[in-house]
Amino acid sequence: MKELEKFLIWLAQFNLTQKKVDEILSVCQDYDILAFPKISGLDKTFKFQELEDMRRQANSTAVNNYFNSLEKQGIQVITGVSELYPEKLKGLTNPPSALFCKGDVSLLKEFAIAIVGSRTPTNYGRIITDEFAETLAKSGVVIISGLAYGIDSISHKKALEVGGKTIAVLGGGFNHIYPAEHTSLADEIAKKGLLISEYCPSLKPTKYSFVERNRIIAGLCDGILIPEASLKSGTRSTKDFALDCGKDVFAVPGSIKNDKSELPNLLISCGHAKCVLSPKNILEEYNIKMKPKVSVVKNTSAQEDVILSLLADGEKDVAFLQENSGFDIKNLNSYLTLLEIRGIIRKLPGNYYATT
Image 1 (cartoon, rainbow, N blue to C red):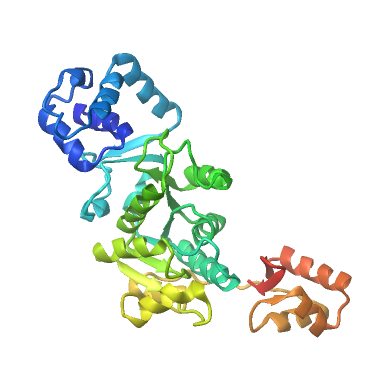
Image 2 (image 1 turned 180 degrees about the vertical axis):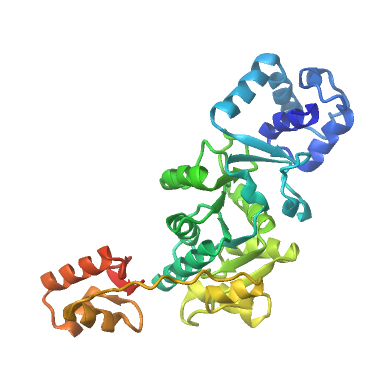
């Protein structure tokens, strides 16, 4: 490892702006970490306490502990001077000076679509996100998102489920996965995809850091898809970063009565996003061939066919299915369970069902 790169990895733990990193490099040109306490000329840019914290950490014990900790956790740090640093991020106004990574870093150079949106999507939003994430991932597209509730986690899970690749960009360090309920998902992504953060493992996420996280999502992707999001959604910042970078923005239209479709509908109507009605629209935009679906022989019974006919025009809840099928609740649940086990239908939140 080059001395400059090692120096930058050491600086990365202090969560400095690129301006401050450049200021340090201008007065510490031999990149000797242990010599940092003796460096002068930084008092105008840094607060006294900030400098003192860095000076305390610039000793052989602290430095060795820091690098050993990264190695033990399987964390690779990619700095702006590394050959592995993604070219896509260099187009950002404020690119991260370093990326802490767990997983397959080669994914940073792959073609990718970000899928972001509401943390509380409707059933429609869940189905749409599932469909797009599955088809895109099966077609070799890397799915990027932010590990949040809702659209983010659905996208990650579906990509992994179909054997695709996904990148999760965190709003804090690896030791503070947010939300905590997604720790297992984060671990799976680190094993089968890539987990990244511009923050050192010990740093907790903040409201501001999630906005900063969004610029990395926008920078890494080749295009961004918004299935559902309200006008007040944090998705707006990701969209803004994407447009600033000249990235494609895609949106799925929804009901004008659904507040979760407000942002996609607005972006489409004002020409800031391309309207997409199926994953095929995105794949055609980039001349990517869609992987054909494998036909499955269902071998359904007459009773199961009744249920499938009721689900043909969209999701339905159990109450509707019972009323219109004529089955008692015990038999209906039995048929539904068998259809779900065979992958013919899927259960949705709120006791709804839909065909796969």
